[in-house]
Image 1 (cartoon, helix red, strand yellow):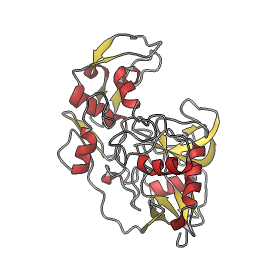
Image 2 (cartoon, helix red, strand yellow):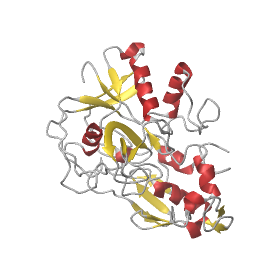
Image 3 (cartoon, helix red, strand yellow):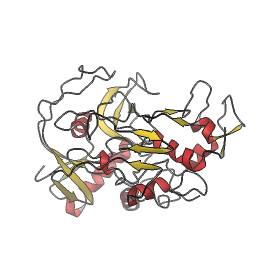
Length: 345
């Protein structure tokens, strides 16, 4: 299988068209206005300067109640990775450190065509080790790499105007005539691709316990997308039906899911020029929370932020909270970006 494709023999149309700017069946939204953000590159990491915010307060509490978030002062300026850490960057670390490669890689390297996609299935422990490895690089002298706190993450994503999305207060997502316009990569991006390119093809239910186990249906009978980008038929938990219980989804996840290049969505940039703070992959933070959403509900876990290629549109905002994961776990939708302090940070 071509590893950039969502299934066997499938071309990576989304990624190619998003990067070339050609008319696409799924295309990024309008590019954000040029910013005057300060940036630098250290140890191969492009970093954006984020101002201190001593009055920072979360937009919501962990249950999602607007206006009830706790204060979490950010007293010092810091740097945040402009992009999520990519497969290619993580390969350097794996090669140098001998650390275990992600399970979706083919042997000791990432799938073809995914060099600039975010690395996934990296535990918090491994992400922390990656930061320590960066600190040991010769050109990192005077800098300290680490993972961001949840407050630092939201402060960077919402910006000085406390926006709902890094680019504004509206998602700007629409779907019509098999074309999705979006500023970020979430489940509708994958769904739109499947419907436009493979809607008449069959997907077989392969999940044990599915009410439809062994049966096959056209993808267009499984998935649908509303005009504002809502997706139906992705996951029906009670009956174990929906797209994620099919062989097409199995083939997709075998090579790291429907991620996109970290440069593919210029319209999703924050005021400081940071990309993919919504969608593509969830991102680890060092903050420990009691999860209020997902399979980890009620557990003490590390907060993850931003949503992913698998997530619905409600999860992919700058202010969505309550998701977390076990720090030792490796998850097919979770990656990370670095934070740093330095000589000018």
